[in-house]
Amino acid sequence: MRGHVPIMRPGQTDDLESVGEATPFGRSVSRMFAVLFRPEMSRWRFRIGLAFFMTVGAKGLSVLAPVMMGEGINALTGDADAGARIGLAGFSFVALLSLFAVARFLAAGLPMIRDAFFATVTQDAQRLIAVDAFRHAQHLDLQFHLTRRSGALNRIIDRGVTAMEYLLRFLAFNIGPTIVELGFAAIVLALLYGVQFSMAAIVTVGVYAAFTITVTEWRNKQRRILNEADTRLRGISVDTLTNFETVKSFAAEDREAGRYDSALREYNRHYVTIMKSLAALNGGQEFIMTGGLLAVAILAGYGAVNGNMQVGDVTAIILMLFNIYRPLNILGWAWREIKQGTVDIEKLFQLMDRKSEVADAPGATVFHADTGAIRFQNVRFAHEGRTSGIKDVSFDIPGGAFVGIVGPSGAGKSTVLKLLFRFYEPHGGAIAIDGQNLADVTQFSLRKSLGLVPQEVVLFNDTLRFNIAYAHPDASDDEIMLATRRAQLGDFIKSLPSGLDTRVGERGLKLSGGEKQRVGVARAILGDPPILILDEATSSLDSGTEEEVQTALREAARGRTTLAVAHRLSTVAGADFILVLDDGRIIERGSHDELIALNGVYAELWGRQSGGDNQSFSRNAMTPQFAK
Ligand SMILES: Nc1ncnc2c1ncn2[C@@H]1O[C@H](COP(=O)(O)OP(=O)(O)O)[C@@H](O)[C@H]1O
Ligand SMILES: [Mg+2]
Image 1 (cartoon, rainbow, N blue to C red):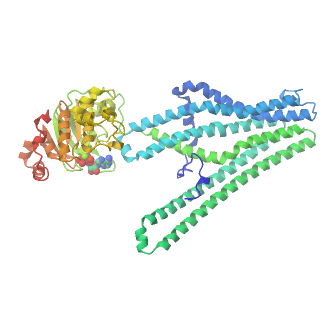
Image 2 (image 1 turned 135 degrees about the horizontal axis):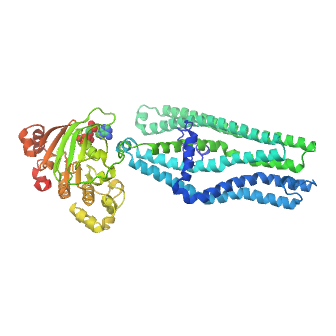
Image 3 (image 1 turned 45 degrees about the horizontal axis):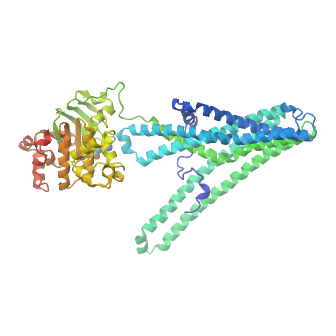
């Protein structure tokens, strides 16, 4: 696509949807600056102070330099009072011009030195904010993460942190100092040459800023329209090129070219508007500045003619105004960056202000597992935006028992397990483990005591060691290998040339389904949780692989309370007891034999499954050893 380069600036994305949104500017900016004063930043106090003084000092020198130049010229033209205005009476032309040179050099050089040493501070402040936001996002409830695309979260943090850098740069080191300079200059002009020059400078800058901001706001709107036209244009070209068969079969090639042509014309029209308005903006800015300079020159010339002013004074005033006007040429761009930056940082702060739906109660205690006895008491829960869910579920699992949960898909089996993890808060009733209500303990201590093997184990794109040790990061290689052997993964790892250092690929794609599941089992074994939760841990595997994983799971379940959701009834037939869940209610409960004798839903399902493709699976697959 054409025409993008001239309208894109570095650091600017083409996503301008949010430009122009009203945000509490002052609040987010002061919150951003507050980061500089956090205790973690205290080691940068000196640098921050130094940067402040260097910035103000540079501006002071930048205002004084033209005065020195002016006095130097006055000395040259033989004015007896040359230098007296600034307490340098009797200084020669060369001395005054040398002072001018030094002042000018420092005015330009100090900000560069500052930028060099302040980068560390900015980076550190950015890191603080980024880590804060990242940690906060990690701690937010599961529901939040489920409803948010991870890319979007990433973008919010990324953009917010970048925004911080350019807000600091523009506000603290550009716009702010320019305002300071204008203030200094107004004072110096009024004291040395007359208040009319201060007025002229202030009015010119005011008109300039108002004009720039108004035009930039208008251009932002045009830019959004241009982006929409661009999206339409892309849409048409991609759509027709992928639909070539339809286009051809309707002999519509020329019609499509026509459609493309008119979309392109539309785009070009808006593009030209943007370019014209840029020219108008720049032209207008020049007009205002030159007008201001002309007014000041006339005022000064008038003073010179009347004999109140020297040639050097006129030079000094004009030079001073040039200095003030110079940084203004980026005002339009800076304004847009600042606005976008405020929007970005506001979004980041919104994320950081978001409260987790599941939060530790004030004074939450540390959970201590004993035997791992689980009690659900009249638990009710419905997912956001759903009417049905868990309806009044009660059960008691003695410590160390093996319990199966079965039922049709969507019955709420996984939801029961998630409630146990306290990923969601029950809407009614209570869940307790070993007599401790989940609502009263910290999430950290609770989840440390629970191990989960889900239907599909998802792995980090790292080594096997990293993934297995995730439950217990300081485990030794011996401990890891022991866990892998118990998870029936020992031989597999031995067969790998890099062993535990083998990388598993994105989401574990370089492993087979069965291997991935066994990595999940090894991880659970290594974590050694008192309670193990299996959510259809073998449902996605073929029967050969399933058997291997079942063996691993049997091993993992030994000596702990185990809650196993199973799709295939055979995998839980050996359980101490089985809960049959349907539409959020427990409709049957008991041991396999009791449920068969009951001749209800379970017995019917059993009959269907053992008659169908699961024939090879006797209930011996999970024989008594599994139970304990
Ligand atoms: N995060 C969620 N948001 C909204 N509804 C959900 C969510 N997770 C599950 N559900 C719904 O809750 C019901 C129970 O789901 P689930 O517990 O996963 O069933 P099961 O594990 O028994 O197949 C289903 O109707 C499902 O659509
Ligand atoms: Mg499920």
